[in-house]
Image 1 (cartoon, rainbow, N blue to C red):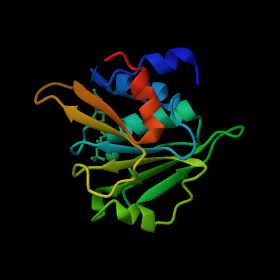
Image 2: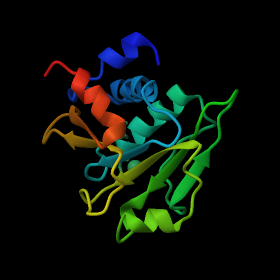
Image 3: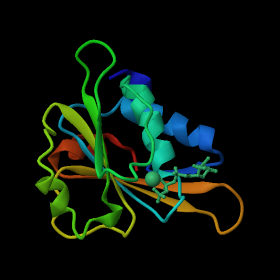
Image 4: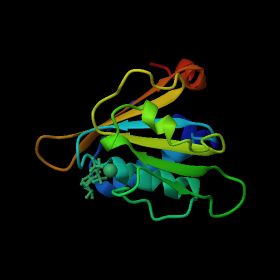
Length: 162
Ligand SMILES: Nc1ncnc2c1ncn2[C@@H]1O[C@H](COP(=O)(O)OP(=O)(O)OP(=O)(O)O)[C@@H](O)[C@H]1O
Ligand SMILES: [Mg+2]
């Protein structure tokens, strides 16, 4: 991970455009490694998939990243080298996050990003990065909140000044 990628992800961000959302995803990808789980919460059309598009670009995986309408999860393999794959799951139609486990995806060598439209459920994996995307009532701006949970993200939190 490059130094400047580590420093520039504030826990609360104002994101004015879809392009800025993709850019945030690209920077976020610099923090992510194989085995990581990212949970995206936010209402329909908030910009969750747009963020995942940026993550996919940053990880350098095969695209395109789109809304998985007819499939629950899609695997995007790395384009080159040995970087992690991206597993992009849309849990909108699932009754619980445990059903993502039931898909039996090989999450070990991948970064797993789950879009979760209904707010966060009980029983999530201990190590996870939760990101909420909240649209403004009027206009295009979004508020994005990042919260790391578990040992995987604790070290980063300790380093944060706030
Ligand atoms: N600031 C912004 N951030 C993200 N997307 C934006 C922003 N402003 C406008 N948009 C637009 O809003 C839409 C967001 O759609 P997207 O599919 O990413 O949302 P989603 O949260 O994944 O929705 P769903 O719940 O249906 O999966 C896109 O058309 C995008 O171009
Ligand atoms: Mg989506």
